[in-house]
Image (cartoon, rainbow, N blue to C red; front, top):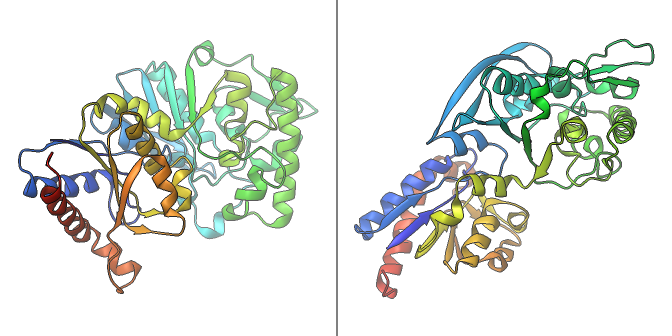
Length: 379
C-alpha cells in the first residue's frame, strides 16, 4: 500500500517533517509493508526554504541589513545550483524587531535585495522564488529594489533612503546602474493574499497596524504607496494599483513586478510544483495531510485545500489530521478531503495540547490506521 504524508507545520509545536515522521511511524506499526512517502509542505510563507531545500539543496548564509539597517546574518537556499529560494522574513521579518522598534515608516526590505543580489551575482542563480509574509515593512519594495541597483530620487535628484516614509518623495527612477543579469532572471513571488496596493484593503490599512503603524502612519503610508504605484505605472505601462496581491508584505513586490517582470503566484502551487507533488501521488492509495488548525480559512490557498484538490484530480482519498477543527472546517470536504480528525482531545487546554502534540499525533494516527486496517480490504 502506498501512502503519501503531506502536512503543513503545526506552528508552535511540530514542524512538517516531524508530523511526517510521527504519522509514518504510526502507520508502520499497524501496516509494516506500507510504502510511505513523506512530503512536508509549506503554503509559501514560513517554512518555504526548509520545505524546498531540505533534501536536495544547499543553504547560504550572508550578512544583510535587517529592517532597521542593522547588520544581521540571514539564510536562503539554492536548488540545483540555479534556483534561489528566499523568505523575505529572514531579513525583513517582524520578529527581528522588538515591539518598541516596530515602525513601518522607517523599516526597509533592503536586506531581501541583498539576498537576491548574492544569489544572482555571486552564485549565478537564474531563478528566484521569493516567499512573502511576516514582514516588518511597508516600503513598497523601495529597499529590495535599491539593493538591486535601482535608484529612487526626489525632485532635486537626491537619492532617498529606501523606507516607507519616503515613498511619497520619489519623483525619478534611475535604472542605469542595474546589472543586466537582473533583467534576465525569472522572479516568482509566492503570494496567497489578494490585497491591492492602497485603500481600505491595501497594504498599509490592513497590515500596517500589526507592524506598529498608528492611524496617522497608515495614512502617510497609504498615500505614499498610491504615489509610488502611479509613478511605476507610468514607468512600466502596467496596471499595478489594482493588481491582486500586490499589497502583500507592504507592497514589496511592486518594483519587481513593474521593472523586472516578476510575477505573483500562489505560494502553495509554487511549492507543490517544485516538489513534483502530482507525480509523487500517482498510484497512491491514500494521502494524509494536516495543519495546526483547520477551519474556514483552510480552503483559501492553504495546504489542506491544495493537497486535497490535487488528490481529487487523481482520485486519491485525502484524510486530514490536524491539531484542532474550528468553525467552518467542513468546507474542506469540497476540496477533495474525505475525512478530518483532530488531536485536540480533552479539556486540558491549548498549551497542554501543544506541549503533548507529538504523543497525541501518534495516538490519533495509530487509532485511525487500526480502524482502516479492519474495514478496508486494500489495507
